[in-house]
Amino acid sequence: MKHYTSVHDIENLDELIQEAIQLKKENSAATLGKGKTLGLLFFNSSLRTRLSTEKAGRLLGMEVLTMNVGADGWALEFEDGAVMNSDKAEHIKEAAAVLSQYCDVIGVRAFPGLKDKVKDEEEQVINAFKKYASVPVVNLESSTGHPLQALTDAISITELKKKDKLKVVLTWAPHPKALPQSVPNSFAEMMQKMDVDFCVANPEGYDLSNRVLNDTKVYHNQDEALKDADFVYVKNWSSYEKYGEVLSTDSNWTFSKEKLALTNDAKVMHCLPVRRNVVISDEVLDSENSAVIHQANNRTYAAQAVLKRILEKLD
Image (cartoon, rainbow, N blue to C red; front, side, top):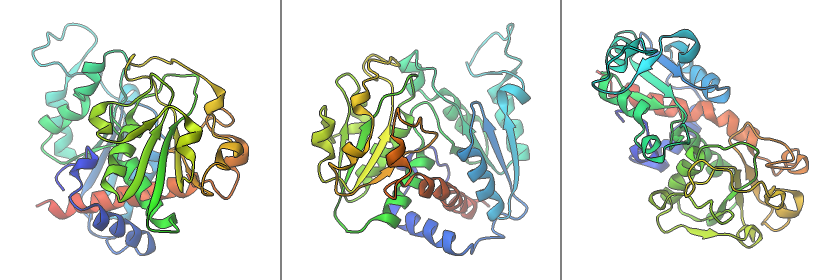
């Protein structure tokens, strides 16, 4: 594994899941990263991604440097050929090259603007680091994807499943703000790599990109989709069709105990942070069906497994 910027960078998903589970049981690679440095760059806020990835690096013996780019560094220019006579003080060409002198692996988090679909789908920040850095790059959440979260989710489902043939539902839920499609995109792509019966439920106008969905069945009736589900991933996202817009805040889509009763006693998943009683009800989050803390814990081991694979490829 050279980079990890998409779930499609995973060559053998089952092997990677099992490796993460084994690392969780026993840290057999505690010195693999000795003498190596992991640099984490955050263009946006983070709690789980930052702390879990820092911990993952240290569990491998790496030194870890973390930078909040907006607060701690120069404003970066990403456009080639730009005349830099305004507020951007440093170009990504120099910034990525310099960081490559200090770090053996670079992790980057950069959210979408949710204004320009084409620009967001170009993944300008992540792709610029891949282009101009001379070291591996890990996606800590980008404009269109969150592959570390998706790997975490695959690990969690593998650990928590009670039978082989699973029905997994990704359902939209209301939220007062416009949120990216990053998490649902990567989750949908990951589920297509697993041997599960996967579908998506969302209101009209909230279908994810066809590039992500492929042949995945989409329901516009949440109750119908939830029937007999073994795992339910609850997540808000803004409209892809009317890009970045909030078209609905319908509380009938909030995941409640009544919704849970439609399932096969499903485990309920969310990437966190979650708005209680808007996205998921207290009764569900505080029940034994909630898997959100289990998922959060697995963020460390997903990151550790990915970093281990990358370190093993370094000269």
